[in-house]
Image (cartoon, rainbow, N blue to C red; front, side):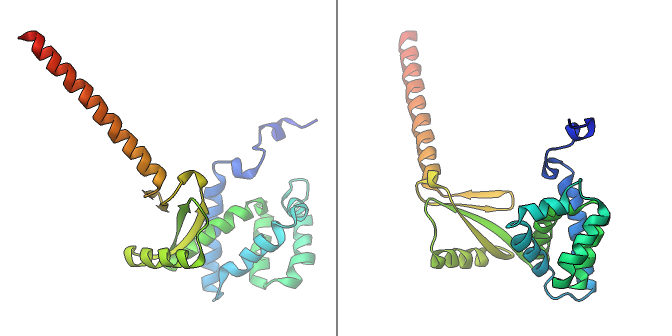
Length: 213
């Protein structure tokens, strides 16, 4: 039977509203340490460990991040499994996370580190939604146009949203530029409705005016 602590804890660390803030602290520290150590591509090992190890091997991830696995056991796993295949810098970082029981934040740390690294490199991710999948040439064309219009180098992230019917929705940070057919039809519908209501109101005004005479 689960104890009181396990019942009150979030079912997953990502549900904890403070997880992202804590992960960002570790992500910034990781990038700063990498810069001091002259690591040429600090995201390479972090991305590989996330994409090639944790994601395709969920059982290994659970073993490494579970509260059931002791801190010493996690350090032992890092020594046996990761150290022979990774740089000393990356192994040291994983051990810091293990010692502070923060290995479960690795997916969030990776996302935060990637975002910050791109920002420091003068880049930013731009989401481009379309009704159908864009070709490579279309993505490149959009990227070129955005590059000429934005004060940073865009990293275009295409997404398919069949509900759009046609056109594009481009999101830069919190700003959304909607040129989709769905949006234009909705706008047209709104204008027609406003026009219809205006005509009704005008007819009422004329009728009221006639009665007054």
